Length: 416
Ligand SMILES: Cc1cc2nc3c(=O)[nH]c(=O)nc-3n(C[C@H](O)[C@H](O)[C@H](O)COP(=O)(O)OP(=O)(O)OC[C@H]3O[C@@H](n4cnc5c(N)ncnc54)[C@H](O)[C@@H]3O)c2cc1C
Image 1 (cartoon, rainbow, N blue to C red):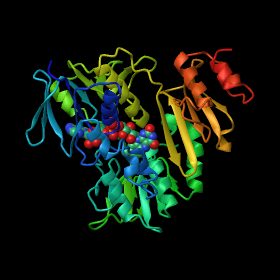
Image 2 (image 1 turned 90 degrees about the horizontal axis):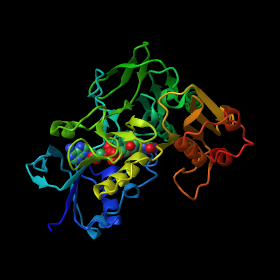
Image 3 (image 1 turned 90 degrees about the vertical axis):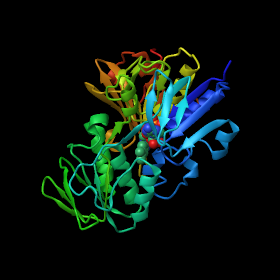
Image 4 (image 1 turned 45 degrees about the vertical axis):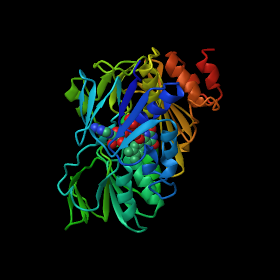
């Protein structure tokens, strides 16, 4: 029998975790992990937090230390972009022309920053943030007392704003919505976060947008639609990502806001799987969705590896993400594109609360501000774990009990 050969395109959290899981599960064939970035696979969350603030090293961010891949006979091809997939011949073509054969292929190409199409976007000092190289460029210009404009106040924009303020940079943030983060977290929670940032000195310009970056050679000011002129030394734009689906689309895979995969991470092409930010996956609880969470990269990377080995278990992880801003930590479990009721346990103004997003009496998601643990960590017997249970089991709950601190959530989650 020839040795089985699994090729993985995309060497970040989803791709690298899949490679690790293949070995952990006893796969003894060939694994080749191909990544466009030159660095060893690393985690991105610290890029807007500890690494940006120069409090964490790059090495602390690695998915696995360098020696691991040699020890585990995982062939790493870094700084190499895959340019084509031939699903009939089972070949991947790399920049430079090398052709790599596979028995099974995993695509974990993630996402890239949306193009910044504002006039002046190519001026020096205008940054976007996805890779460690992007982050190093931003780090190089950070100085106490400098002025930054943050464009977009989603999770990346709000985390970068917090880090910049912590480093003594003046921050003005321009955000299109009335209340930042309200689309994901709801107005009440968004207001609390906005008030935290304002208290920390961020000038938050809501319901406005950037019209132009101006300066000679380097950005010197930002002009907004409402007519504000913001003098600045740098800009960081956090305007979202697009999934890197082009390779798979060109190979004939079905794509619709991400590559479509079933609950076993299979694309519509034979022996081609996908995981992470690039997927629009069929979830047994939430239906079809694409998320941009580190936990999904990790968990779906693991699930895809098991599917590659023939496992039939559907990927049913109850999604979760976190965000750290100043001393505050946000934890979110579940998925709620819309809700008809948001029930709080603890007052939002106290900045220590849980919020439950309900639709027709069923909890679809929950958020904790300064109140959560890791819901998938068995050591943490916390409230968010109970929330995961409620979400997974689609239990109808009495909102009054949800909001009542005296009622034990775990008891409620068990349906008693
Ligand atoms: C600054 C920042 C902070 C974040 N903070 C959080 C957080 O606090 N919490 C949270 O839950 N999530 C956070 N995220 C999101 C999280 O990092 C992503 O969800 C996660 O990185 C997705 O992993 P992935 O492996 O699917 O894709 P990616 O991390 O996007 O990696 C895809 C890899 O594939 C490579 N690639 C693409 N095309 C090709 C090709 N043709 N050939 C070879 N290689 C290719 C890319 O270069 C890249 O290295 C953050 C993201 C950023 C940028």
